[in-house]
Length: 287
Image 1 (tube, rainbow, N blue to C red):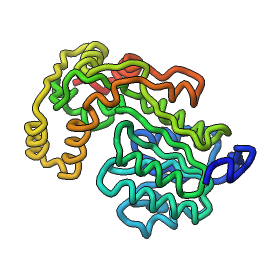
Image 2: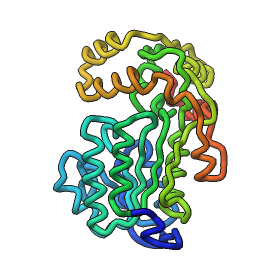
Image 3: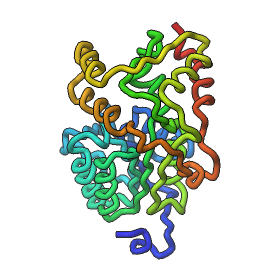
């Protein structure tokens, strides 16, 4: 069902109703929830530890979390491109529509056919929808998997000189909140990137300069990288996901910038150097 079929004016009432923020304690969800709360909106956190628990792997938790909800920010764990992700997101979107949810905002991934399958399922659910298709998060270097290696002074990854337009998750959150609170975003797909391409070596070099420390980048074979993760008892599903990202998605298919942030917000996206400067100022990379 298209937006025009639901409402010929293309608008929806954002003045009341509860927004369920899935992944509400994660990188993007936490920021979305904080911004909505600051705007005086009613927010329900979707997580296993929430007052009304939500667990992607336990479908009996979905309906209670959706009760009384008007809109949903969907951030799928562990990753929307993971095996079965599209079917799970699709089943949730269908239930959300049946439960009376009017607007779904999906966080998706660039260059991932599996993610685009999930997007199609959300579009077909029968609600208003907005897709936020994001590039690689800048915050992975200070809030995610890469923080440990950065603190150790050496980042070893199975990726070469391919350019990636790292996106600041604050920009993702701003786009999502705009979609959830303003008219004009229904039926839109925003592919969001940073304003320029950097290799992972470039990104690490910028972090080193901002942190005032020596941090090196080393390219390693994918098999060796996976073996190290196994030695550190990283769960196999995480290893498989990282192998997919580094072995397939980071093959140059995403080595271009887009105007998604500009279209959604009317401003340029935040540059990686600004992110690195602010993260360093918080002392996150000090040892």
